[in-house]
Length: 335
Image (cartoon, rainbow, N blue to C red; front, side, top):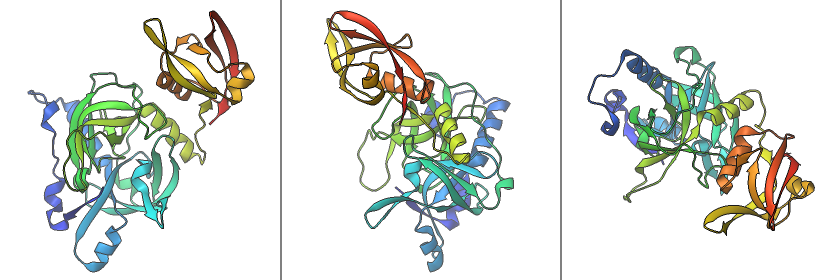
C-alpha cells in the first residue's frame, strides 16, 4: 500500500495536486479557498514502519503508508486498517506512529484506541499539536450530489487533493460493519484514513476504501469509485475512544435473507437468537418495519440499529407470520 518518494522532491510534491474532474470553470469563493487551506494544513501523512530503516541508511526517502487528519488537542484520526501491520502472521495495530505535516515536520503519536467495527483509529501527538489547526465535524451530513474534497497521500506522496461529489450516501461493503458513503471522487491506496471535507473545511467523513475499476501492475491502486465512513458515525466512535471507551452498538439478533412476496422483495428472519428470540420472533418471519420505519433490506435494518438506537433500548418490530401481521417489542442487546 505504501510508496517511496525522494526527500529532494518533497517541496515540489507538497504543492497541491487537483483532480480536475470536479473543478468548476469559475473561481472558488473566498470561503471555499479558506476551507481547502484548512483541510490541507490539518492533514498529515502516516509514515510506514519501514521509514526508520530508511532514515538509518541515510537514503533520504519518505515511505508513506496512509493519511490522517488532526482534530484537536493533538488527536489524529485515521483508518484502523491503515495502521495494521503483519508480525509473525498476526495483524497488529501500531502502538506508535510518526506523521508528516504539510510543513514537512515529523511528529510522533501514540495510540489512543481503535474500532475495527467501523475502521477508525485515533492517535495523539506527543509534541507539536499547537502547530496544527483544529478541524471539527460538520453538523449537517452531506447528501447525494453535494461537493466534497479529500486531502491525503495517494500512492505515498502529497498532500494531494481530490475533488468530487457524494454518490449514494447509504451503502455497505464487507470491509466495515456500518454504513458507508459512496463517492464520485478520485482516490488511491494511501488516501485511507484521510479526511473527507465539505467546502468549509469541516469533516463529513473518513476515507475508507476504493473499488478498482482498472487493473494495473504494481502495489499502487486508484479509482474514481471511493467510499468513506460517514462523519456522524466517525464522530461517535472518536468521542468514545477519547473517553477511553469502546463505542457501543445495538444487537437485534436476527440473520436475514431475501424473500419474494408477489412482485416485491422483502427480508425474512433466517436465524433468530438473543434479543429477537427472547421477544418471540421466529425463523421465517418477514420483517416489515422497526419503530414504524419500513425495512426492505438487511443493510437498511443494520443501518437503523447502528445509527438510531442504543443497547438496552426497546424497539417495536412489525412482522408478517403466515398471513398475519403482528408487532413485538425487543430489548436490544450490545454488539
